[in-house]
Image 1 (spheres, rainbow, N blue to C red):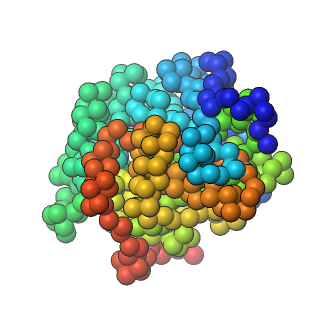
Image 2: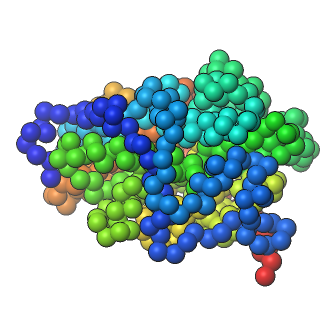
Image 3: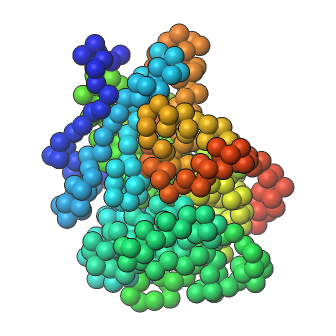
Amino acid sequence: MASKDDEKHTKFLLKEKDIPTRWYNIQADFKTPAPPVMHPGTGQPIGPQDLAPLFPMELIKQEVSQERWIEIPEEVRDVLRLWRPSPLYRARRLEKALGTPARIYYKYEGVSPAGSHKPNTAVAQVYFNKKQGVTRIATETGAGQWGSALAMACQFFGLQCKVYMVKVSYQQKPYRRIMMETWGAQVVPSPSTDTQAGKKVLEMDPDSPGSLGIAISEAVEDAATRDDTKYSLGSVLNHVLMHQTVIGLEAKKQLELADDEAEIVIGCAGGGSNFAGLAFPFIGDKLTGKSKVRAIAVEPSACPSLTKGKYAYDFGDTVGLTPLVKMHTLGHTFVPAPLHAGGLRYHGMAPLVCKLYDEKQIEAVAVPQVATFEAAVQFARTEGIIPAPESAHAIRVAIDEAKKCKRAGRGKAILFNLSGHGHFDLGAYEQFLAGKLQDYEYPTAKVEEALRHLPQMKA
């Protein structure tokens, strides 16, 4: 329960010295190891050399590490100081509007120069690539937040950046593209004619809206076919989720300042990085018996990989260039509807998040687009910040949980990650305010078809 001293405080700030010095690796607290990443050709667990064409060795080591704490290089912390520690707010005006006894807190990652949580890992990844002598990085981006973050990080460390941007987002969010180009990146709509993977998709469907899976195929091919280039991913992989734990580590300290303790932790989930970044340090306490926190991953009902997907080995990309990872998947050939939360349009989910969900350590819920924007507008009109459509999924469930507290007559501390602002998503808000935004139903038939194409694992 928050103290009376806290009644006048809505903003909880840490000092620069409080920026975490180590990343938290949740794998150290798993009772059983995560399922291995498999080679699609041999059906055997892959080794470091299988990943070496795509990633620098330091990131490969982090990917498989079982160490609980991994030091953050000072050169990385030096860049993080531009916006970290990020603020924690108590949403008192939203609480009042809802008439709830719940205490709603949000960690605001929109204060980064790129406007989202993504630079937390972009800076680290580019640093380790630079250290290994890499001069160019290829990547994909959905809504553009990851591409923006990587473009900025590449500029800071003097690397070239090529971004394959999902075509529907490329068309919906031109300012994201301009942002990336301002930071020096080359941006092309995906599927593109720059890669064999892109050409293959365009031959089958010249009007393809693209997907994260397709864009990943293009970026992976780009990196694998050039000696000067490595691949960088903004979510899903273990090391990416670990880099994001600076969010949750800071939030724990800030809740101590508020004399409160999170009972419910919420994050939107597309690939899993911002959910994991906030929730993993809290879930670590749960895994070691120090708390009973509820952690809820929120996904769009049009692309519900956790709640409707199959827990199986699948490719992380559409064409089948990546190794096989065990995750909740809708099938790597599934192309989601062009909903406005472009960062959540992914067929799978981070393997570490999937393992926690499979073991019932976390919960998952899928919410429709219109209800999500209703929550976003209510938040903007009470708290002032216009959230990214992705983040609005977490707000939707935070509001729903706060309403449950009202009905039960018991206040709980609810913490969610406001992973970015929606300043480049105003076209979506315009459609919502005009009553033109629509919900996309979960396409059962399309997913069943995609799941028929899951790779067959060799014995």
